[in-house]
Image (cartoon, rainbow, N blue to C red; front, side):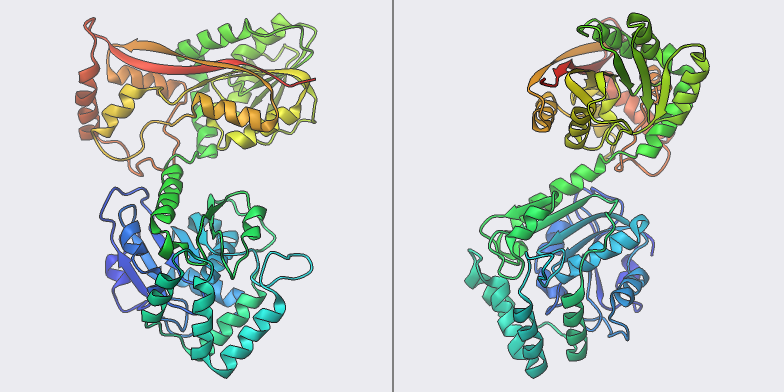
Length: 523
């Protein structure tokens, strides 16, 4: 299916799908698909699809044999994943409840290119406990459930409704809502899906897409202990198995924050390619970056013997480090093979080593480096906590981390001018000073001396600013960027919007917030 799916959703192909077009500020071009859990159909979502349609196109999907979806022959995990592949859009964010969330997780494992991101509510790594995984329903309780369904599905569903509401601060209200639902479930499909629920578990593979896992604090079906085993988990206080019914605002805020964050998800291969293409012109355009880097060199203490220039780019500072510390072994590390090829050729006669790698997973031994120098590079990392932990691992006790990165108030004028043109993401977003300090402290660093200051660069025109950004490879590399080329009319509107910042001198300002300083690993 294409992104513009309204006619198909309401049509004859998939009567179990319902389409809710976005009615607010669209956070994603791709739709958000909601898949319910066992013992229900899409009615279980109640007002959530309408509420989420303020952020994106929403689709609700009935599982086979539930609601408007026809039963299928194969209810194995392979059969369900094949069915999902047939009915889902080519790319989407998946939001699953309980069993639906477990299926969404398995689909994201199997088909990561089709999944933008993953959200689950009340979904465990496996529903039934065993000797290896205890944070789940006891096997005897689940067996009783199967027997109850076989004996009397209606009575089984009433009992299941009680367990879904149990423990929630709005238990009575949820019970009333569940009693008023007129869910349609084919008995044979219900039995097959229940058997699947009992055997289903996450696959062994880690998923490569961003994920958010929501749990109810007092869930009677999925113990909250399961949340402690998942780093990306968020617990909704005072809620049971259906927090979207009892605490809808908290759930919507959590989902909204998550989706907003995905707009700024960095595309690392694109980043590497952008800088590789900019290698020939980088040094002639990176005046600010070089000035900041040379100031950073002056803050290094002692005589480091093992030095990493992390995000070395063209090697501009790598050679300065080698000349400043001739007895040291200098290693230039960059994610861009194009940049490294340029640096190697330029400094072929220098005793500098080069390594292509990602700062968040360095191919370096623990406690092997006495200095990590990084200038205008670490802002391209996805997760500061992961990055800080990796830097801490690689540094020797007493080792220094000397860094400079742009802060969140960088290019404020450009960001605001673009906001007057459209709602897409045009300017990269950067972490704040407190965010950096917190991540470094959480990693174990105790001597953190970081500060922030603003530098204002001046340009004759917006075009010259954009050209400078292009020449240093600082393209818009966020997931929320427009999928189409920027047109002449958009650029004209941008130029007009930026005019409100023109100075009395006739120049246009471009503010850069610079976060820089020295961090030392305790001995």
